[in-house]
Amino acid sequence: MSVLVLVELEDPGQGGAGLSVVAEESLTFARDLPGEAVDAVLVGQVGQPGEEVLAQCREQGVRTLLVTTDARLERYAARAWARVVDAALEASGAAYLLAGGTPRGTEVLAHVAAVHDVPMAANVVQVVQSDPLEVERQVVGGAVLERVGLGGRPAVASVAGHAVAPAPASDPSQTTVEQVEVELTPADLVAQVRRTEAREAGDTSALTGASVVVGVGRGVGGADRFAAAEAVAERLGGAVGVSRVVTSLGWRPHHEQVGQTGSRISPDLYLACGISGAIQHWAGCSSSRTIIAVNTDEEAPMVTKARYAVIGDMHEVLPALLEELR
Image 1 (cartoon, rainbow, N blue to C red):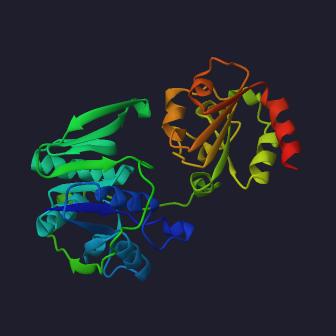
Image 2 (image 1 turned 120 degrees about the horizontal axis):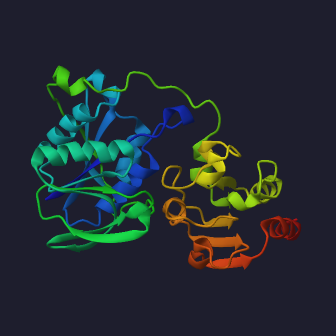
């Protein structure tokens, strides 16, 4: 009995050549399942995987990496990718199928689950018990945890981002590479990515990869009042993130948004300034290791959920903090 994980590559536009962080998280999570081995399937890259990918697979204890040779699969097509994953599932004999909780990972697994007429659990954060399999998953934007059973075979689930930190296996493997072949039909490629365009401005990787994020909400008061937050972020070697209302008002670009419809972050420190803490925003920042809230409202949800809180005006607190840091 084994676990099969659909893995995705880093964004090549950002200079990535290996597996994404979400893929490594999913492989780490897979080792908590009661499988004797972990296999992986890579669909977005055709042919032999690069050495960086293989090194990561070996470090994660992957027994076999299944790849494809059909060049049409380089462009994302949910149904076609699902056909490959299903073929890999049959080849590996896996009882469990996982993927990162990305839009692609979740969509592909939903297709596979439908083919096998089994339920799928999205945004899983932990395994509660293994026999029978029971998992805990995020619902309502991460505000609620739901416990569900996955009795069907294969058991299909997507792993919530930052549910676990990527960690090497205690027993690294040699990882063999095998090809999986699928006869695609025109219907499999009806819905397919035809063109991608680079982001015109901004870089979400600076936000999602930052160890410190200074969050700013409506309480900042205007588009011209971010200087203190930017200065603190720069001083701490971090990045600025904002709430949805800030981007809706046009004060900051969307790539800085933290939340359910923005980026999900997991910094060591999240300094949330003037942010009320709506459920949608909490869904994007709840994985932060330490949260400090700065707010004039001591009853604000962000204040009540934060580990530490400063009740005060961010335009007084941040300059004082900056002075101390200097």
